Image 1 (cartoon, rainbow, N blue to C red):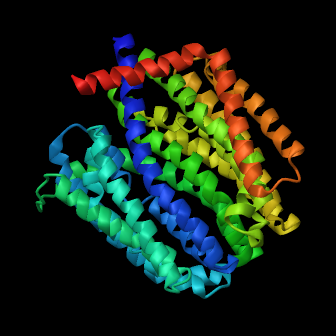
Image 2 (cartoon, rainbow, N blue to C red):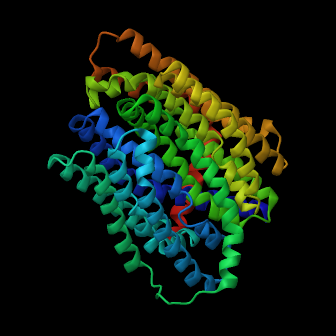
Length: 489
């Protein structure tokens, strides 16, 4: 049973992640191009104003369904679906009204009245998300990630195209806000056409109670987690102003698109798979280690390469006016790598029906992070120090997350190290190779530095990975081949 479940986990998780990442990457390529254009069309202050709304809405967004989506994945009875839908609708409308009437306080917090209306308009995302959230959850529950590709891709493309068009039309920061809403509308329409679920007006207090008993502990965990993820935006915006927040936001954008979003994608796939094998401790432990290894094989080289090549990257794509982004992006790239190494620990807690553990760990991390960030913004008044403060706290926090998960799975830390050494050791060679290129070619142009640094670093990483970890490469290839044969049959 264990070997069968472990093979099933690896095959489904890798194939599902591939489909979701194809959708993500295809759409985010447009978002990335949009970011380049917006960075050249908008000011630092414009980015900061949007950052006000994103930071505030991000806090409410994490509780928008009260954990109903995760509870629906966990439950197996289809009779719960209508109740879940109406719970989502009611919470979506409630949070929209809360954001609408609370927006003036947002303006007061940031000492900027421009934050009021961007917050109110972006809050429309709550009811728009709620309308199609059940359909999206059902696709995830059924592991139908190839079908989920369609609305995900459509949302990202429509968001990017609309934002670009509005930016050229002179809408300024509103191009980002309205593009986000337009993408939600497009994906919602597609999801309703894809999923053959007929809307009914059934609502069961019994089912609602069951959903909320599972979901609310997740919400409390997510509230703390999103606080940890967004408190830096709040403090930078309040104490350092809109321009500093604009720089900090752009510095986060590329590491977020390439690393942190990959972690979110893996979590979408891994949680329902972990939930299906939650009673097989051996398979769950193997799945945890393999997931951590596969994620690190991508995030470690990407993050280190991004940190080392941030200067030519920023100057070439965003322009010289964003040179302040460079040292911040270096820190955030390292921070993103550290986050990725422990990201799937939370899925272990949830799959075991013990999300409260993650809540307590998140509270502990918040108690460390907030004083450190307050020191960085109030005493040092430097967003670069804010970035490296994030790195230090992420190192401590994720070490604790991983140790607790290992203990729950009855695994030794050595087992995790044996899994992670495959990407970490070649990454050292990548770093040396890229630093050599940057040092030798310091007088070269940004384009040549970026191209050669990327090619030489990638070649060093792949060569060392092949030399030291042929068994891992063969294992991944076999999983992909098994998935291809299964689809062909």
